[in-house]
Amino acid sequence: MAVMADIETVAVIGVGTMGEAMVGHIDEGGYDVYAYDVDCEKAKEAVESRATVTDTLERAVRPAEMIIIAVGTYEQAKSVVYDTGGILESATAGDVVAISSTLSPGQCISLSEDLRDEEIEPIGAPTCRGEKAARRGDLLVFVGSDRSVYDKARLVLEQFSSPENVVHLGPVGSGQAAKAANNALLWSSVVANQEVLLLAEAYELDLDLVRELLQKSTGSNWALGGWDWMHTKWAHKDMDIISDMAKRQDVRIPSLALTEQLVQEIDQDELDRTR
Image 1 (cartoon, rainbow, N blue to C red):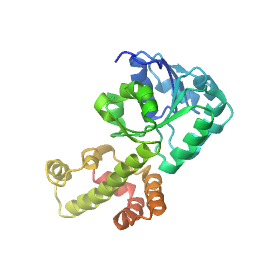
Image 2 (cartoon, helix red, strand yellow; image 1 turned 90 degrees about the vertical axis):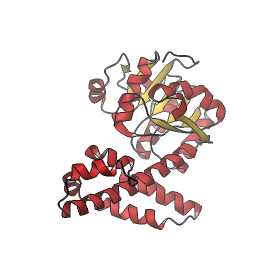
Image 3 (spheres, rainbow, N blue to C red; image 1 turned 135 degrees about the horizontal axis):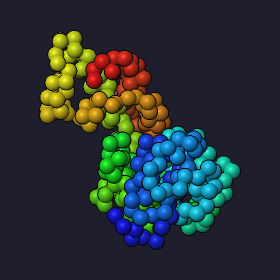
Image 4 (tube, rainbow, N blue to C red; image 1 turned 45 degrees about the horizontal axis):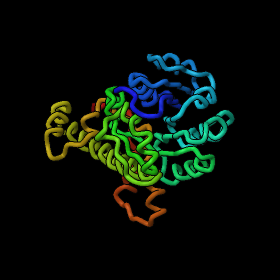
């Protein structure tokens, strides 16, 4: 997809699985791309495109007109924004900052308010569908921002998604709220899948066949289709976000509260056994 917007230079901060894929697709779109990760050597090994891997955060942020925060936690996102050489210090008024990290709506709003104070334009843009979709460039992007910022950033986001899958939901924080809803359903499915497969195993059923049939059934779910590589690495953080959101809005979520407990009790060896 050729560059068709005013934005020509993009920085991706955090070159993990998702960030690495974003770098490649944005580069293929004809943008000038800078990439930074705290593990500089790992980033250099991961990035196989024309993108420039920098050895400091400042060198990635300063030339960019749009900065994508693709780190894993709120603490890491705060470091990208507030640390020496970070966005508040190195970005220019009018630059766009896309917060792609999975944060709570409140965390996204807090960062965005400080960015706006420096006339930097924030956009919440968390993604879902997982690693395979990232590599295909087929992520679903939940967008929360002013409409004008969405219009400005949309074509960059479409480089690792598609026009119909970059969806504006409302103001900053809306994207993170929708991503949290996705994650709540994901982890609920993981808990149910694990219990069902252990039960099938106890009845000496062929688990591969059971999974194949269930994916054709009314009980099908996305997590079951990706069971071969499913893990619970981010479950605790994701369910903490859900719990915090419910408390803030005084919404009862008894089944999700149980999911939060049960997903943390999943034994990795048992999970591996049901693959």
